[in-house]
Length: 189
Image 1 (cartoon, one colour):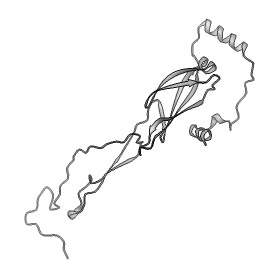
Image 2 (image 1 turned 45 degrees about the horizontal axis):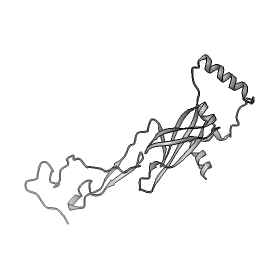
Image 3 (image 1 turned 90 degrees about the vertical axis):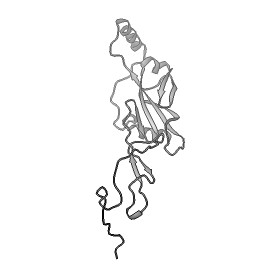
Image 4 (image 1 turned 180 degrees about the vertical axis):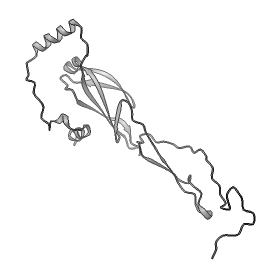
């Protein structure tokens, strides 16, 4: 009931198996939008099959290092941008270099620290080619560490001109304590 044959002079490289192992380079096209840990399957690029069987598949696991500025969650991207107090109070504009190019950001007057500005279609491309995610710009107040005497005087005048509000702790279940993407889900349903 044997399926093989006796080889009188077996090859020392393959030891009679009829195949040898060696390394080779394979070109892999990485699709835009792929995330860390995803696998690519290359059909027919794996090991040769035994006894004349078909060649197997090669699986490539992709590792994407985290970005220094942008935080990714699926196809959506978050970036924290410190904005001067004056811009947050009276509004303004600035240009942000996003993942896909420059984005014009309009800061509404009276913006609070932590406000999220969504930019649909400016996030990561979907790996299957179905559109782009959302880029969320989170504005935070940039408080200067050093002030000149004139700057300190002007801020004192502003503090006296603004209505005095009591300083009190915020409730533990306040909206600011939620994780970022929970806030986004609440915001957009």
